[in-house]
Length: 467
Ligand SMILES: Cc1ncc(COP(=O)(O)O)c(C=O)c1O
Image (cartoon, rainbow, N blue to C red; front, side, top):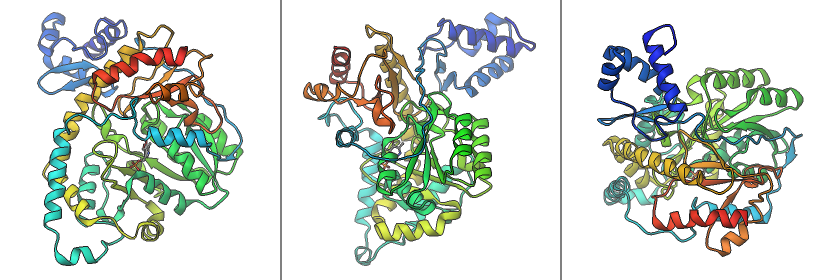
């Protein structure tokens, strides 16, 4: 063991064991007691080393079970392809891509998988919403709710964000119809037709559709699958072109689940201030974190230029169509636009969700879900390692999908229709960019329960993609 202090020696020894796969992804490390005995160290020293590895996202503490390997730095080959920087351009989403987007909204390999029991967290949610509906008074159905949304829900959201290091008042939040609506309001409030917006590449295709509809031009910024948007590349882009806004997901970017480190966030805010940009933070995946949910970029926003957009779609239910936005200096304009585009949100739905949060049900749902997501992610990555060609795959610490990179000759877009005819929906890489890049890549979700039909669909993929 090397290193100055004993906790550092233990940390390096454990790290080496993880890299050499003495303990593989998802496996349990020796208990604290065993480490104390075998390494002749105090409990405090062992705990210190474990906490440091946990802070790096390499291991995860599971209550009453111990520490488990959460990331295998060299065990799984990480994707390497990188976007090119190209001049800003209008967005033109093709019909084929629209078709794929429509179907991939189901976020699965299987078009018709609607079986299975509801998870306990959703059963409780539905009960809560049902109770709120039964409480509805006569006048409720005759009036719209206030445009900002139900105060009780905004209070719960403020408390929820407070636990992630961001102090926000309910008055700084506005309820929306999902995160897509929040992103739409953010772009409408901060940009004008013809403006240039910087996006992650590969990145979320729903944003590209919004830019197209709003007549905004896009510039794609190369994005790492581990650390998110590349700040050197963003700086180059901002020096070459006038950019009005930048859309980022620091907490688990689409499609590969990248997590932006603190220094990346600070640099982004400094660049935003220097070039006077609006930063639109898509925070929708934060609560799918496999460990503690990261603090949002918004928590560092002293200059009031980060618009945070989020929703319950990824962590709870896509069907309730409830999201929220914190509009910083654009808050009043966003409230006005909410009124114009939606008038109001459903009051009983908001009350039901607020009750669900207040009685702690959301927190227990997230805790349970975290373990399922981790198990699904590990199974998916392990099964991809068995493919007959070299497969590079992201190892996300949050989000709901992995990004898979296949050998260069593979064309995932042209496999889309044959795969669809064979009953399997794939989400090809070119969907995540406007410039036709990432032809040999695809996104695969681990959001759904691991079932025999999923395993079967996954098993057919190599043949469908590789011929
Ligand atoms: C990164 C990202 N942002 C926003 C959305 C839209 O979310 P919502 O369903 O809340 O409108 C999605 C949905 O796929 C997404 O993946």
